[in-house]
Length: 221
Length: 289
Image 1 (cartoon, one colour):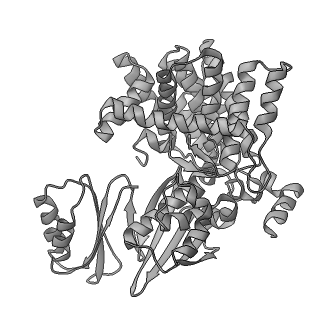
Image 2 (cartoon, rainbow over the protein chains, first blue to last red; image 1 turned 30 degrees about the vertical axis):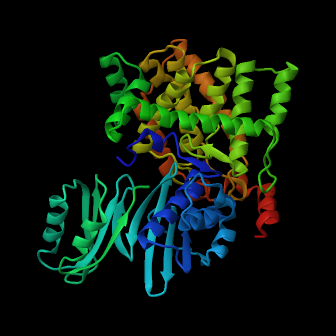
Image 3 (tube, rainbow over the protein chains, first blue to last red; image 1 turned 90 degrees about the horizontal axis):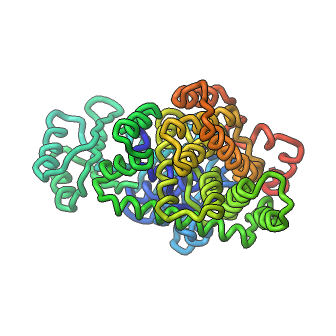
């Protein structure tokens, strides 16, 4: 079941005009920001399907930018997000693509700052709810209902076990877990949705595991 | 968690509680929070809805100028006493239009279940409130009942116009509101399900064809239609009229109709009213394409 709370249906409180194209878009921007950890210098935003066709009228563009700047769905600053982006020194461009993706409301955000970069693909599934479906072209599935740990690691024997042991030792309950890789023996991405809040200390421990490359924590949306 | 209207109604009947109570209990369990916290979250949503319709009645204009000001006209018309269809009905139209005009003006609203359909549920709720002076708890519970039915639709079909057309948005909102009206009036959970079915059946096939892709034309007026349709369905169910097709099958039918809907009619702004000569002209004037 994709919708688990009554407040997915009655809610969110948001700046209009569209739950999928404005609120959902803001949440995709927020998730991308949360993964990146800071405001990017530059962001390329690729739009597909209905997002591409109607983003100007729905304020999808300002909502995505607003989310990237850390504005929530009910934050009226979304309306003037382009001005706030300029103030924050965040350059952006929107690129419309004809390609058909799995969902009609799809955006891929490519964030950069200095040497760090990340690409995040989000879909807006209605009523303001969204899902992140890929990060750096690794397929994932995060509902946003729980906090999630994303661990990029070397696809070798024992790494997954060592990571889950740390999580278990910290008394953190796993709600859902996924491992995705592009090819055997290369980098793999492990996504772990958890019930509890994950401390900085736990993240440091996971980062210290042999074979772990990068760790991200994503808040629930 | 209940995943069908049948299961929802069954639980209410077996435990002899209302649909709103089932929804609240499930939410308490899911969030691991006490009753008061869940209640207050919904109360916050109610407050936003009340502010939105108030704002719209003072007159708003969307950034494009395509919508706004119609709630003011409807309010004056009601005050003139010349209305054809009864004051409750007219009030529902007024509150629905008002809320959705605020949405189009990028004001603050509560999605129910979506922003494009945000006028329907508060539309009928605030209309009834004006006539019957409801308690705060009655209004909050109305939203939980609406949410319970919307919850099933969202998990078994869709609530986004881009996925299933306007039937998934205003259609769902109208059916949710109809079910909640029945509970508010003291009807049974089964009667709520019948009202839900009747309302949704009357909205099947409704396409999402916003002019220039904006949640304005025809969305604002369709919210009025969704609200009055909810009142019609609720009154029918309360009169003892039953839907021949069970609610879950109606949801499935809505889902299948949505799947067969061409992309042009699913919030792309490329079909239906959006593709009329006037629709195309408006788009060109606004965006130059």
